[in-house]
Image 1 (cartoon, rainbow, N blue to C red):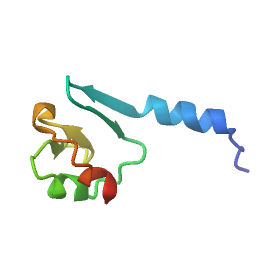
Image 2: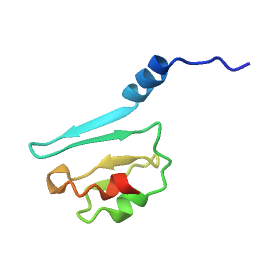
Image 3: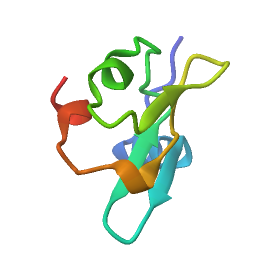
Image 4: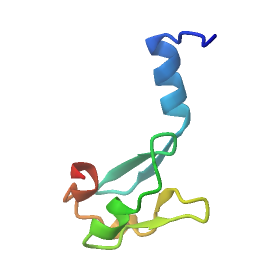
Length: 75
């Protein structure tokens, strides 16, 4: 039987799986637990800010190139 989790448990797990990348102009947060490895955000990034890891998860390759266009969030 599955154990019910509280909202706080879910939020704590999400925060633990989130990687944060910070520059002077932008902050990018990527949640590995929610990433399906579909590559859509990587393919649509106009500045090649994102790349896939060998584990099929997204990471930031060039944060200084990010223009905050938000295409990665709109997909």
